[in-house]
Image 1 (cartoon, one colour):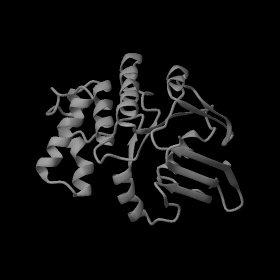
Image 2 (cartoon, one colour):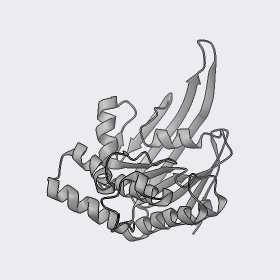
Image 3 (cartoon, one colour):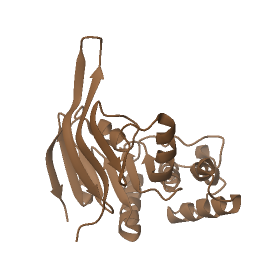
Image 4 (cartoon, one colour):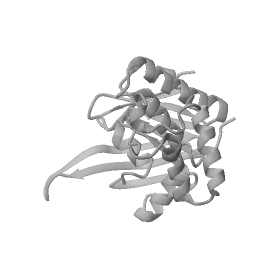
Length: 233
């Protein structure tokens, strides 16, 4: 039985205005449906529009034409302030570089999205941040600052932070691109656990063929178009 559609793109086109008379088309027209609990890799050659597509999915970039629906809501024309609130509550982002705040500890970095959301007490925020760090295997690193953590540990803190507000979707843009193979494997195992144990919807862009095949669905882009969309189970 099919699950509810959590993300829908309708005839999305993305153009860049290079000058007054010149526009470059990144995504010429793309429609896509993603159901709750899917585990998806997005692949394709450099310049194929993978990251642009991911940022449009997460409301960090807007399509030139077309619509983006998240959890039944059309987010295409939301104001930047509305989108900031929506992203904080419903979308978890993990980038190639962790973007942790260097002056704060691991538990403080994970707490940040919850403090912005302001729907939990300080005690609840602290407890959830510690629980998430436990989930990513950093139960003995609560009070370490990013400079005291390895690259793999920093990225696991970033994964924990992305889950702070129990998002509908976790989006990863080359989340292991800056890690050695062992640390990268640990991060992907985390994604697999999240997907299998919590039915978390996970979508990630990767150049790594091995990791791409570990997803349950693979979308391959060429020149901003879906060349193939295949189930891998």
